[in-house]
Amino acid sequence: MKEILATIETTKCDFSIDIVSAFKEIIVSWNYSVRDTVYHVFPNSAYTLCFILSESHCIIHTYPEKDTVYLNIFTCK
Image (cartoon, rainbow, N blue to C red; front, top):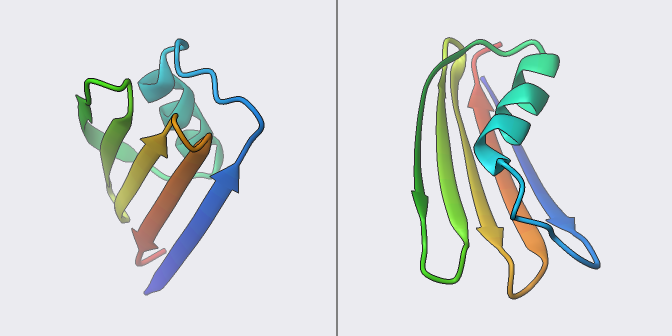
């Protein structure tokens, strides 16, 4: 089992892009298999994304007011 935690700070987060597809593409490029995706968009345009992986799961929380993204991957890979 492995857990990966990351905090990504930027000067400007552009969440007007299709963030779900963008993160899915990144996860797939890391050789994880996405089985399902669930997400919620908050009134301030923040996202919580949950990718169900064959290997376990990946959770992403965005905070546009802080220009920050938190990433958590838990995997048995």
